[in-house]
Length: 456
Image: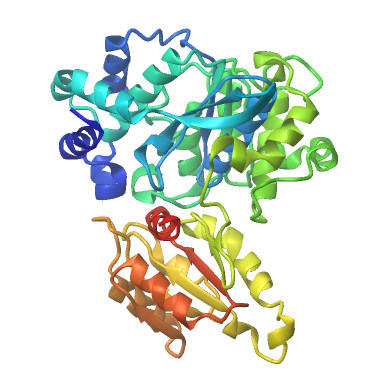
């Protein structure tokens, strides 16, 4: 079985969430425990230290920021995230400093090899047919097995969906992180912020410190209650007791972060919150993994894209016209970059200072059908030309339907529908002037296809 045959096999026996949505979600940990037992994992004392990261948005960026800083501190760091944008192998990587010759070294990501994926799937096919695990359960087991073989010093593990019943939640972590709570996957996680917070808080463990990135009056009581249950309520970062931190309330650490680690390779305005969460997490973990210096944190944040290979977060794909993509794909995530789009396109260039701002912005946009599409569309700036499209996924909302929903809100706006992402990008590029901005987003899968378009 080669790599492509292995992926085809996985998609056939266990269609992934990004293809079929909620049908792929398999709540509960019993199958995952059986998989881990089959691969000789110790669940009570896991085989390597784990930082477990959950949240509605920002958990991918936060995970990469933490991993980059740990690598800058000299650690061999495992990183497991989802979904992938271009290659399946993006999901699992090791980040460490390697010798490059002539006494030089560099920190770089090393993805799980295609050969390992093929071998893992091929040699365990009978086990998968017996246990009937989900696509994500198989992928998680593969990630844990490869990271164990790589003898990582620590692994940053991103939750797939929710937390309490997520396949990743079999680990006994040394730190848990919950970035924020927003409305997403409400059919599976709950219809109120408090209900969703209960699911995310399910990764919190007894005696294990936890960092909360953002909270509000609905979610904070949930976290405090769970912290009390886990015995981690504490009085501050200066003590050595296990405790819970609310990163958005740590004013001293915010000022310290702005002083020692002001730069970040991730340029979205919303990354300030993710940097704060990651910084507090790294301070919290210093006593668990070994001290992480401010110098290592500053280096990791400043080079997080180069060190980890993270893509799709306010990423510039092309210049003249400037093409930006972002993976924010729900109302909570998209709201974080809409204002930045408005600010960016409200600054007229010298050549076009007499023109209005709506001549500067072109938006290529597509979504999957199981999101709150109407809520998202109401957030988007009307002052733009829209190129609605659909990703190559069974979950995709048809471009014509998306256009219809937009026109119902903004009947006089400039907008057309395109059957493929490449057609939409080609049309936007042809219409845009050199000094204009093209934004591509709405779905991870739209962004992934856009990357392939520009990479080719």
